[in-house]
Image (cartoon, rainbow, N blue to C red; front, side, top):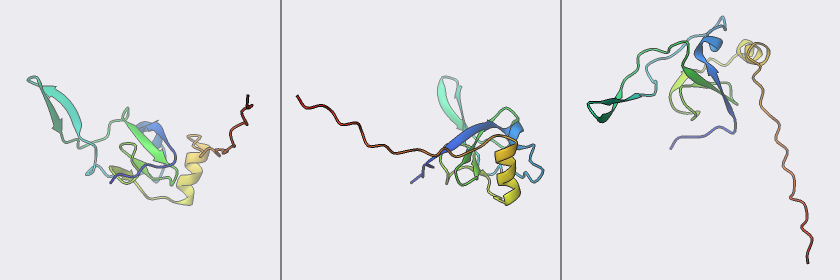
Length: 107
């Protein structure tokens, strides 16, 4: 079963490709859905275009979709990659605060 990340953020592929150590795996890309002769058809994708949207997850892996364990494009997570994410593309993991709901007046 596909796993969701607690957090991921979408970026254009061209933004991520600016990282000097960028490599990408294209053998596991999401299929492209098209209508051909009135039928919904899925076709294999063999490349990532600069304008394609990729997702950086809280664990710093990059996927072609919102699930962190499917369609992995980049998983060479290094300190340099984390620094690039923070300083160049402004990726940060939000610190969510869990607050108790305000007490409701009883009436």
